[in-house]
Length: 279
Image 1 (tube, rainbow, N blue to C red):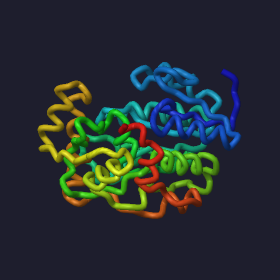
Image 2: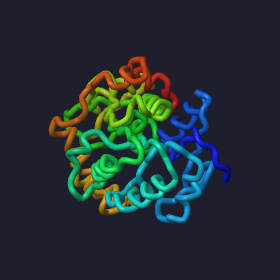
Image 3: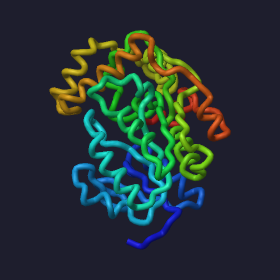
C-alpha cells in the first residue's frame, strides 16, 4: 500500500459513527481510509492481528473504535497501539463512553483511555458520548407493538446524535494539536427520559408510542438468550442502564457547540429527520 501521510484510518468505518466520520473527512478534502471486516477500504478484524499493519500503513491519525459487544479488549487495543507507534501515527481519537471512568472493572473501556494517556509518541483525544439517538431508529431499541422496551426507569439521558459525535471527532482529527489531551463528552441539549422520547416519536410518527420499562435482569437475560449480545456483555448493559435508572445518566453540556461551532441536535430535530424509521 502506498505511503501517503495526512490520511486518517477510520476503524469501524462502516459503523454508526465511523461511516459519518469518514464521509465528513472527505467533505473537508481529507483522505479517509475506512477499516472493517466487510465493505470498507481495507479489511480489519480485531481478532486477526495480521490485518493491523496493512490498515496502518501510511496513515498519520486514527479514529479508534474498540471491539463492539465485548468487555475485554484492552490487550488487543494495546497491540494495535504498539503497531501505531511503530508506524509513526501522530494522533489517535478514541470513541469511549459517557462515564467511562466509572465503568465496572470487568469492562475495559477506561483501560484503553489510561493506555493512551501513558503513550508519548502520539497525541490523543477522547470522546465520551451520551447514549446515541440512533439507538431508537435502528435495531438497538426498535419500536415493537408501539413500545420502546428498555429498563431505564424514570431516569433521563442527554441523548446525542451520531452526526454530532462524528463532527466532534472530525474536528479532533483535522487539527489534532488543538485537541491534544482533550476529553469531550458529546451530548444532546436536553435531558430526556425514554417516556419523553416516546412522546416525541409519537408526535412525529403520528401513532401511539410508549416506554415499556421492563425489569433490567429480564431484559438483559433476554438479550443474551436471543444471541443479541454475548453473556459477558451483560456487565456492560447492567452498568449502562443502571446509570440512567439511578440518576447518573449524562447531562447536557456545550462540548458539541464548543468544538464544532454549532448547537447540538435536539431529539425532535433528529426524530423529524428520521420519521420514516417509525412509520
